[in-house]
Length: 312
Figure 1 (cartoon, helix red, strand yellow):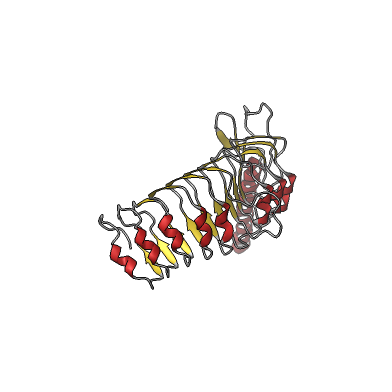
Figure 2 (cartoon, helix red, strand yellow):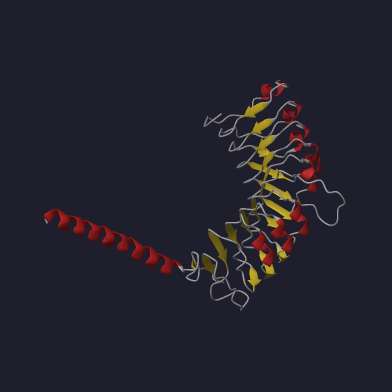
């Protein structure tokens, strides 16, 4: 693997039916996914990222032993079929930066060992690929820690069933067409560290249940139509909302704990109300500067007294 000259996918590779790892990433294959690849039924890892390949996934669905499938940054298109639900051993799926369209079937979540789903920067539409409605004894990937669905055209609300993804650490849904309110059930994702919902069409207030997410340090909610108060994040390192003026809704979103405030003109600046402990950034800087100056003055006085004793 690695940078290499242009050339097609050598069909004789597909004769290696006992091969478990095929990594051709970062090469210029400039080819279509061959139908014959579906015969490589022993494959556990398939890396074809950044290879300029095109076509659709039909032949890939036969690879039911795959654990890692990385096809990012190519020219693949078409829709994802329900047959992807046959790939029960998938742990990592990355189809980002391609040209896929249509809805993502919930069958994808049949793979209960999934750890990462990365589908960003395509043209997916419809509902988010989550369990929806009331389902008895739902089967969900318990180890799913990353769900990256940003920069698509998903146009549903965020379903309450997202609370079933209890292992999530990173949730990226930015730059879609999501609407409705942010469900309070999101607050049950207590392992979540990063949540990105910016540039959607979300309305209403920010759930107070967010205070339950003690590990949440990076939050992006700007570019929506949220109102009320946003001070429900436990200890944010980076927290961006529409707490700037002028507001999209005409009602300023209140957020002293936000690190950055944006406005309806998509202008963003540091929030002077943001506190470090009980201090604003300016107050914190002044206190720290004063403390450092005081420390050096103390050292100077000690040095002066010691020299005076030596001279006497």
